[in-house]
Length: 179
Length: 185
Image (cartoon, rainbow over all chains, first blue to last red; front, side):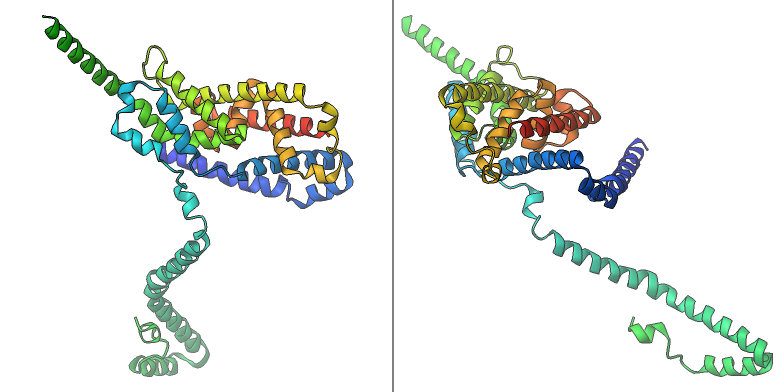
């Protein structure tokens, strides 16, 4: 119960944040217009973007692949003798940085999303649309029958729809979709 | 008699070392678990591999000698905070050394031009200088969030503040950094 509430809270917070950042974020139209005309705000925006750029540069600077192994070896060298003889130590001394799971699948995120969307559509078609298409069909027939009954009379409408009921309909969902 | 005593001593030493190894094995586990994140953060703070290794070594040395080798309650928090403090001391020392050795005129020569402004190295060093000047509570958040890439809940756990406070501190820190980095021009 508590967990569900926390999740709901988080969802609402995320939603609010998304909406707020769209309306009041740096990409909002009114903001861009204001920046174009206000030199003080323009300077502030430039300054904050410069900090972002500096952080990006710091983050993208690569280090040597064996840095972790070297750092581990240095740290292990100052630990107690008994710890240095542990079997785990040799692994640590040769350990290379591993990308995070999210980073590993970052490249194929779009294709995974596309496949998921296709699967979702197929499921919806299979479960939602196909199962209720018979219901739509019968409701449609009923309304058509009522319409004709009003216009041309009960007898003739009954005759037409009795004939139709005898023949297989072309709009039969099972035949159309092969389900 | 003497031989017996010596063998007893050896046995005792072996038993003690076994217990120590058993009791401090968590250090190696912590190294395996948090080592990569720590090295990445330190590399971003210091930008020098030798310094990264030094700080990493000092951090684990301090961890091993924490209260006579006792395990801290929150190992991750201890490691990251200790590494942050050592790294920032090193960064400050480096800044002072640089200012003392290099002629300030030479340092400022190219900073006005647009080319220098876009110079990656200059920007990185300017950012590091400004981070070193930040007040401690703001600096810790910026270092953990932007250089350590930890989430706000993780930062709140490490620093013992709420996630909201961490967000506010980060915002203030960025404002200060932006002001200072613009003043440097």
